[in-house]
Length: 121
Image (cartoon, rainbow, N blue to C red; front, side, top):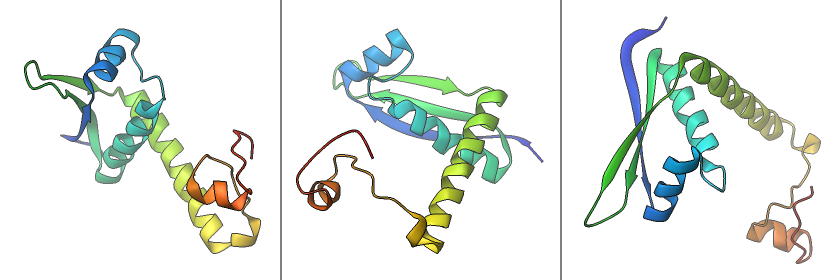
């Protein structure tokens, strides 16, 4: 059951990234998608009908806050994606033999894959 209350998540953003986000509606690296999943899942877990991401521009002279209010459809979609991600993570913890290593550019992957960094699994 959804209540009238909301959840809020604060994200501090470098000035250039913040300005780009306002202009293009997303970050170049796509991290806003992960932010949306996170706050949508909070809204889902706590039964809130509103989810806000408050992007705060890091600027000593001209700080700025942008309130990104998620739609109900976004909350449902991103909460479902996060739920799927959590279910997959629990599965891999429970059944580690089913998991495959991913070469994601991390130090662990660098060591595991013998110093080769790719975007392919």
